[in-house]
Length: 292
Image 1 (cartoon, rainbow, N blue to C red):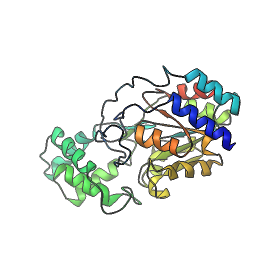
Image 2: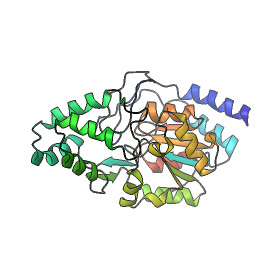
Image 3: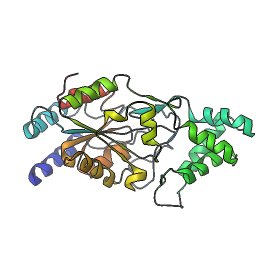
Image 4: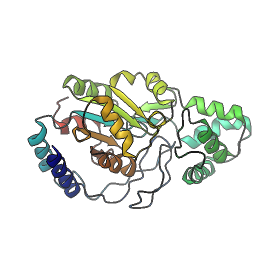
C-alpha cells in the first residue's frame, strides 16, 4: 500500500498542480491570500469574496485518467469517505457580515458604514492572533470579541453577545446546496462515510443541530476540539481516525485552496476545490461512483 500511495501522490501532483489561490466564500470574509503562500494564517470569516475560476484543473487535465486510476486501486467507488468543509462549502451566511454587524450595532452606537466595517474586519482578521497558536479555542469568544470590536469600534459586551449568539442560529446560516441531504443519504446508503472538517469554534455542533443536518455525518472534526486548524494535516488525520479509514481512502471538499486542498493533500487525502473542481455535492457523488 505504501507504493500505491506514493504512486497516487505522484499522479495527483501531475494532474492537479496548484495554480493560484482562489479567495473563496468561507462563511465570513477572508482577506485575499498572497499567491503560493502556505505560511499565512487563514480561516472562516463572514461575507462574500467572489471566487476566481481556475485556468487549469480537473475539467481540463486528467480527470478521467485519474478516476480510472483510483478505480483500478479501490474499485468502482473510488473513495471510502467524503470530508466536507463547513463555512463556505456546506454552509453560508444568509446575510453579509458587515450588514449584520451594522444592523445589530445601530442601537449600540455603531456608526461605520458596511464598507468601512468590512475593510476594518479584513485588517483585523489579517493581523496575527497572539493570544494563542489557534484562533478558535473552545467557544472562540476572545478572538471574536477582538474581531467585532475592531470591525465596528464598539466594545459593548452586550453588543458582542448579541452578534455572537446570532451566528449560532439557523437564521444566520443556510445550506449551500439544497440537494445536500439527498446526496449525503445516497452516499451513506452506498457505504461511503461522511465527516465535517472545519476551522470553527465549539458553536459548530449546535449550529449543525439548528440546521437539522448534524445527523447526516458520521463524524465532526472541529479545530477548537482537535486543537489544530487547517491546513495543519492533523485535523484531516483525526477525521479519518474517527471514520476508521486511511487518509488516502478519503476525498476532502472545501472552498479554500490553502486550507482545504493543500492541507488535505499534506495529510494524504485526495482533495477537490469547491466552486472550481466541483460545484455541487451531486457532482462529488458522481465522481466517486455513486449514483444519486
